[in-house]
Image (cartoon, rainbow over all chains, first blue to last red; front, side):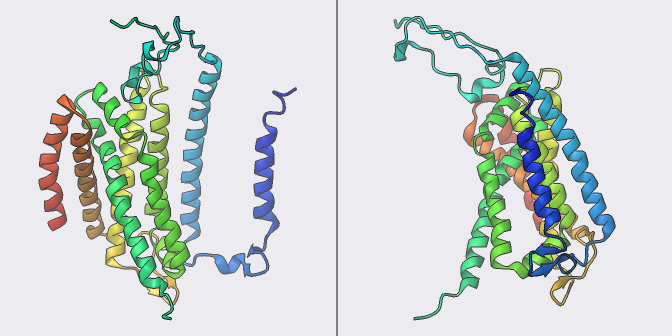
Length: 118
Length: 209
């Protein structure tokens, strides 16, 4: 049931957007400025078409790719960190810095091993 | 009491914003421009991570520039934006690919990592070229009729703006190389030093000509 409700938020956002954009026509600023007065004179219809197509291509690439990685993350599930043997702060290995993380980051669930101090 | 004159004040704010943008986003775009020439993959990891925590903060100066221009000088905004419609559009699209490369490169499998390398490199390169065209067009001025831009959508493409675009790529690459000299060590630092040496000459001769 909850899973089926997942898209509702997106539907609400898009519906609200369409309402503001379509509902205020023929005004660009309601009661103050007509949409026809707000048109950029130098911009040809073909320019607008080209930019719309560029937007569509970029979105059609970016969204599926991001979705692919999101699904991958969900499939992998949360990483469960092992409890350290001795939960004393000074004995734990420091978290890997992001700078060194190229490899360490993609390795799931590196166990934190408490090494005794010399 | 003398009334406060907003024009010089906002000119200073805008000038400061543009200066900060070129300086700050310049070096992280420069790191992207140098990215594919890097000696090895480990060096690329370090290069990307050296700018990962700050690049989006640097880009916020661009937002300040755009919004300040709209709010303080709406007439200039209404003329400049249509005149450089395509450079700005292409810059934004390039910045999208560069931005998601930061997020997704470290999540990609080893086989597909090179795609994000390309997204980061070409995103940075194309965004910088677009900014260079914008700069060239701005310096050359726009055809204006009354309160509107009267030229065509591709007036920004001139031999002069091609030169400013190339100069800006070299200049940002130089900033990126100096950033890497400051922030890295060993092989990568030596490599960045060698890059900075030839970029110094190339960017100064490109801007001089």
